Structure formats: structure tokens, C-alpha cells
Image 1: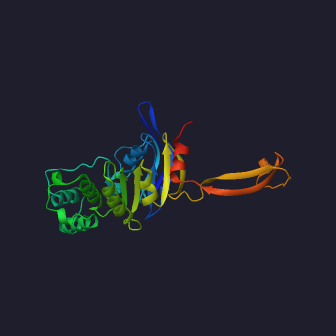
Image 2 (image 1 turned 180 degrees about the vertical axis):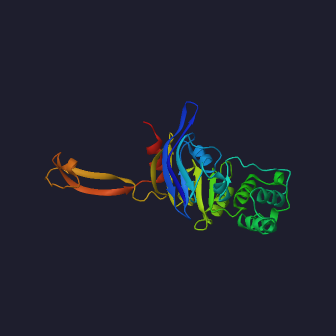
Image 3 (image 1 turned 30 degrees about the vertical axis):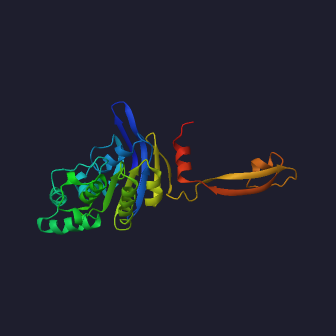
Length: 269
């Protein structure tokens, strides 16, 4: 559904992206994880056709983001980090407006807006002005505008930033319910967002992809080796131990948490 290959981006002399490559399967929720300044938002803006890469390729639903941006935009919903809401409009009026500028046919707008409000649990506040809503509900409105054109792909940039714990849980639940029906990229620097919401994770640091794995970090780990000097038991699986003349007592994989892996990959020491 999404293919990214060798994305590079310069801002003047600043090298923001350095050959970013990854893919997202249809119906998958992918966590795009990295510290602040790692290149997450730049990647999201390229995928949403906000600006082109300096070099490299990216395709969304089979369409090139540089050569066919209008086709890409028809197929994506985008929730930026700072949601562009018109606070003097009611929730329903704003979503009607969003549906119109996204090209939803006039006779289908009412149904599309009702569906988006239902999906994001906004029906009970549809008559309220956006200025009257809590930050959590404003995030729901932002998510609803991303969904109102029934996109194949959702790109969410820091969707829970600034929310309280209750609001975070609610937004996570909304996003998780989209799995299978839509392809989702969730960009964040918050580890629980990925482990609780996503099926796979791409970790980016300093403009480069440093790891790709399942969000549970399955298969990623280190080994704890317990050995004592004494009998020489030659084992091919631990030649470095054997070469020291030690007897191998135990060699077992130890699962690392996503937090352990993240810190290890992005720490420069």
C-alpha cells in the first residue's frame, strides 16, 4: 500500500532525511517512531505531498507522490501534529466544509459526515462550536476530517500529543479500531503509542531508519551467557566462549522491551 525507497531531503545545507526506506502493508497500522528531530514529520509531509523529496521515491496506493500528487491526496487522510480547525464553526459544519474541499460528492456529504462523526464518537457534540470542545474532542474532530473522504490510507502525526491519560486511551482505541479497514501510519516519539496501537514499528533516528520489527519487538533481543571456567565443552553456537576455555552453562534469548530497543538505537554513546 505504501512503498518508500531511499528518501532524501535537504533544507538548505541541513540533511534531514538520509535514504529512508520502508513499506506498509494494506490494512496495517505502522508505528513510525523516533526522537524529536529524527525526520518523522518530514517523511509524513512528503507522503502527503506537502513537499517533494530531494531524491528517492514514495508511492501511496500505487501512485507516485511526486508525479501524481492529486491521485495520492484523493486516497489519504492526514492528521497533522497541529490540527487546522476553524473554532468558530460547529463540528458538523466544519466536517461538511472538509468533505467539500476533499471532493466528496454533494449528495454524499451528509452521509460521509455522519459516518465520520459516528466513527470518532462525535455525534453528541455535532452542534457545538469547536471552540467549546476539550482538546481531546478537538483531536477527534481532526481525526474525523481525516476520515470524512473515506481514505484508503491515514497518516497521523503525533495524534495524542498534549492529551490527558483518559483522552489518550480514547484516541488509541479509535485508531486501533481502524486496523484492517484502512492502512495507517502513526508517527510519534511516545513509546506506548506504538506498543499499544501498532502492529509493526519503524524506528528512525538522525534521518535514517535504524530498525524495523513488530511492535512487540518479537525476535529482537540479546543473549545472556552464563559460563564458568572448568570443563571444556566445545559448542559451535558459542565459539567465543569456548575459545576462552570456559564451559557453557546456558545460552538463552532474552526479550527486550520496545523502550530498551529504542533507547539503545537512538543513544549515541
